Length: 182
Image (cartoon, rainbow, N blue to C red; front, side, top):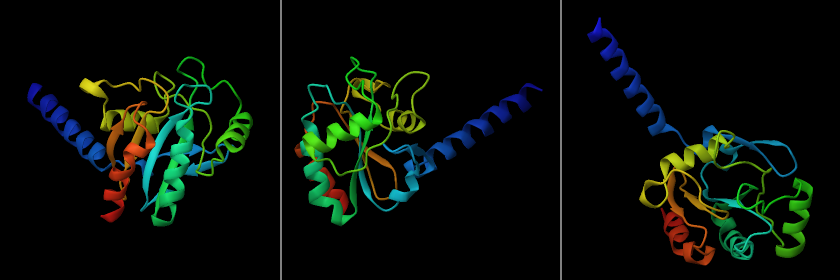
C-alpha cells in the first residue's frame, strides 16, 4: 500500500513539474485599465516587460523610461505591460480612471495598463504568482519587494529576468535588444 501511495506522489510531482515547465504568461488573463478582460495570449510572439506600477512612489518617474522603451521597440514586437498596485505604502490609491488620467497627463503613457491588482499575499494575481515563482528575487525571496519590480518575458512567453525597483528602464535596454534579435 505504501508503495502505491509513494508511486502516486512521484507521478503527481512529475506531472506538476511538467505543467509548470510548460506554463507561460499566455495561460493568464487580466482586466485592462478600462475593465475589459484581456487574454495575455494576445501578446504571443512579443518580448514584454511586465511591471507593477504606482503613481505616488519615488520610482514613479520610471514611467518616462518605460514609455521611452515602448516607443523605441514597439515596432519590433515589444511591449510594456503596467499593473498598478497599492500594496506598498498605499502609493496607488486612485481608481483605474484616475490612474489612466495620471499616466496620460504626466507621462504620456501609451503602453497597455491594467486594472489595479495585488502582487503579494492571498489575493495576489495569478500572473504575479507565476512570475515570482519562476524568477524569485535576491537570495530566492518569493515576494515582490516594492513598486516597479520588472519581469522581462521572451517571445515564447517565458520569464527571462527579474529586475529590482531601482533598476532603471534604460538599464534594461540592452537585455531587450538581445531578446529582440533572437
